[in-house]
Structures are given as structure tokens and as C-alpha cells.
Amino acid sequence: GAGVSQSPRYKVAKRGQDVALRCDPISGHVSLFWYQQALGQGPEFLTYFQNEAQLDKSGLPSDRFFAERPEGSVSTLKIQRTQQEDSAVYLCASSLVTRGGTEAFFGQGTRLTVV
Amino acid sequence: QKEVEQNSGPLSVPEGAIASLNCTYSDRGSQSFFWYRQYSGKSPELIMFIYSNGDKEDGRFTAQLNKASQYVSLLIRDSQPSDSATYLCAVIDTGRRALTFGSGTRLQVQP
Image (cartoon, rainbow over all chains, first blue to last red; front, side):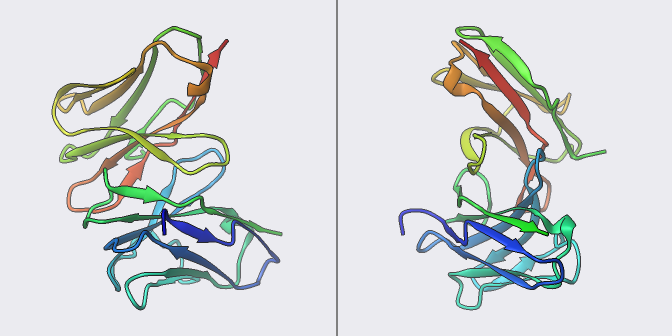
């Protein structure tokens, strides 16, 4: 596709519900990053994939958060038993190279609201 | 202490003035520095990057880097109301691949 596509754009979940957020990166992009952006804050790193390998998951806040990229393309971020503090915008970025700097492109994000 | 610090603002400047946005970082080994612009409800958009000490100019934007002081800034000349947004400073820390962002500075350009 022309850019990084994320779905859904908005998600309202009841506390305790499981959610799955999808990221479709730019075709051929090797690297994929997930970030969490709380209101009024900068994006916070969650996890990084190089192709299908999850090389860094140091930013995942708890074991309720899980991400996968099984075929090295589309990625899914899953949050189990959602809590109110999970409410945020979840941003996905992809990059042609193995570094998230100049070549990284962000999707429009998924705004998750846990009620 | 956050790894990347920015004044949250808002920074208010009149149209046509120079806006100066500042950022400090804690990892002395950081090599890559970025400025992103984020409009409300939108995703971050890269506007400048700088790797070497000194100034880098691109149109109305100038990025300045001082590694000894661990300081990076963004100057916007001839500010326009359309420049009103949150500006995020980001670095790539030593040994990492992902960006570490500051909290952002909200810029308001008054017509």
C-alpha cells in the first residue's frame, strides 16, 4: 500500500475485554515498531520486529501485551484483560532499513478507550 | 529523569517570528536526532534529522546539535499559523533501533 495502515482507527473496550490492533506496513519494509502515546505525551516504544523476528519487546508494559508478525508483514498487537490505563493511541511505524530513524513512516494510529 | 526532555509549552509566537524549540537528552552516546511535527489527532511527521554537531538547514527549519551539552534545538523562521502543532524531539539511543521521544512542545503561532 501507499502508507502504513492501522485498523481499527478507534476502539472502545470494556475493562477486562481483549483487543487486537492491526498494522499493515509499507510493502517490503523490514522493520516494524509499535508505540503507545498517552494524551499529552510523546510516543513510548513498545516493541520492534525485524521481519518476523521480535528483536526488542522491552517496552511492553506487562504480560497482558503481546505482539506478533508471523509472516514478516502485517503485525497484530494484542492486549488482554484491558484496563483503563491502557487507554492511549497505539502507533505503528515501518522502515525499509533496520533502524527507525529517517526512513520510518507512521500510521494514523488506533485510539483505544477502555471504559 | 526522562531520557529526552522538552518544555511542554505552549510556546506562543506571532506570525512571522522565529520559534525556538529546545530539547536535552541523557544518553551521551546517542548518534541520531530527529524533530517530528504532530498535529492534533494525527500521527508524527518527520521534519528534520541531524547527526553531526552544528546546524542543518532545510527551508524555514534549522536543526542545531551540540553533543557536548547534549542539546538539540529546532528553529522555525517566518512562523506561520499552519506551524501550530506539537513538536516532538526524538533520539536513537546507543545500541537501540527504536526512537525515544520527548513529551513534545506545543507551538502556537498567533496570526
